[in-house]
Amino acid sequence: MTEDVMKKVALVVTVVLSLGWSAHALAAGTVYPFKVKTIDGKPTTLAKYKGKVLLIVNVASKCGHTPQYAGLEKLYEKYKDKGFVILGFPCNQFREQEPGTNAEIKAFCTSKYNVTFPLFSKIEVNGDKAHPLYQFLKKAEPEADGKTDIGWNFTKFLIDRKGHPLKRFVTKVEPEEMDSEIGATVAK
View (tube, rainbow, N blue to C red):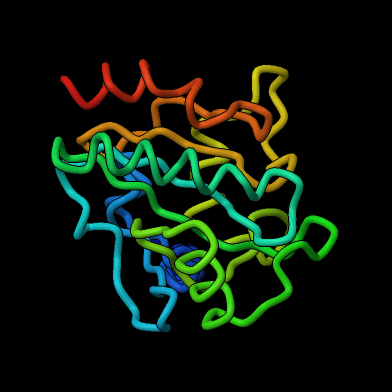
C-alpha cells in the first residue's frame, strides 16, 4: 500500500471513530458500541443493555404525541422484568418541541408521566449533526417508503436481544399497538 492510500485509510478510520461508530458496530450491525450520555450527562454506551430487547424512541415534552409517554411507561412496566428496556432520547428538531434542559426534561417526564425508563441527553436525529446512533438506526430500518429521516417525535425502533434493529414504528403508532410485537420479541 502506498503512503497516500494509508493516509486516506487512516483518515476514514479516524472520522468513523470520532463519530462514535466503531468497526464492530459497522461490521456487526448492533447498537451496543454507540456512545451516549445519560440525562444526567454521564457518558456510557449501549453495551450495558446487551441481552435486552430495546425500544429506542426520540421524545419531546411539548408535542401532541407527548401523551405517548404514558403508554411507553405501561409497556416498560409490563415487560421490564422479562428483559425489555425503553430508551428515550429527547430531540428539539421538530418545531422546537423539546426546548428544556436535560434537568427540566427529566423533571417533566418523572412528575407528569412517572417515567422510570432510562432517558438520555438531548440529541439531534436528522441532518449533519444527527447522533451516530440515529444515523445507524435510520439506515438499518428506513420507513416503508424508503425514507430514512425521522419524520417526527416519538418514532420508535425495536431492537432484538442481539442488538440488531428489527422494526421502525412511525410516530402515529401508539405504544399499545406495539404490545403484541414487543411481547413476541421478548418471548424469544
